[in-house]
Length: 393
Image (cartoon, rainbow, N blue to C red; front, side, top):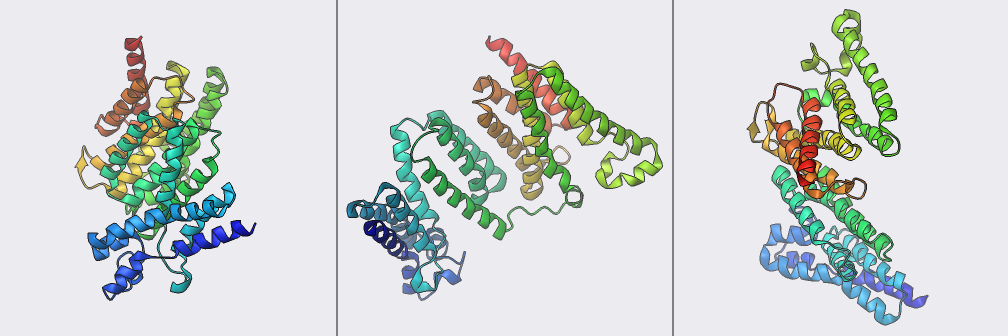
């Protein structure tokens, strides 16, 4: 037990060695007070330049592994060897001699993550196809946002999902998930602190609850996965009837229009709401297409719409086709590909068909067709996937 405790303490001490702070002092500054206000590799690069960032990065990346090696040599148990690595991150973030204010520990976490990945490679749990997919998502999200933390909060969960999916019972999974969760949390904190998602559109703010509730539509997907077409049509048909009634009430009854005004957007004043068109489209999709393609088409509608709206309003600078932007459409494609990737174990659809559907859905959402894209995206992308499926067979 003493060896285990000593390993953890040494890990903390090794982690508390901060080259970024030392290089800053050599320049006469406290690096924790400038730039990103932390003693990390990234802040060293932006504040002191490459000459200081390279040794800082090497040390920060490797000190977690050094702590684990020391713990191993001391004879610590397997679990405490991992904890020694994690305590290095703790020492980096909360160094005792700097009033517990250090870096963010991302580089040290990445070093430990790379160590774990070596073992996943050895058991063939990392597929080339997964790596290529993740690289595509990185490029798409970077193109849409141009912000590293935003890329991190999207890609890291997918990375963890792919590894655990390929090796669901691997003994390193809890430690891998812990490291990725930590890196994800730092990216999320940086995203919030830097206010990277800033949406000034008043109508969106007024009806933000609709965007937040859109993912609730996956209830239809889960229901359909576990039941038959007729039952699902009854469910969606019933919900659609309610929204149709609300629309008809506000369109033809003035008192109803006044009472329901808060639910609907200004541009929906004389037409059916996007909520209703989404439900009608979902009903038609399930009615017309095979189960797997119907489910994926609806998921395109749900995920793509959220991605395009949030990224388009936050980062959209290059406008195309009325109120669409390059950034929003790029994010839509990323969202469609992501939901395709996640669906692979559950849907019997070849990857080529998923890709065709994702691209089609993106194009349909982007083009000004004069019809609500909540209606067209799923139906047209589903039709294209059915056609490609027929062609391939």
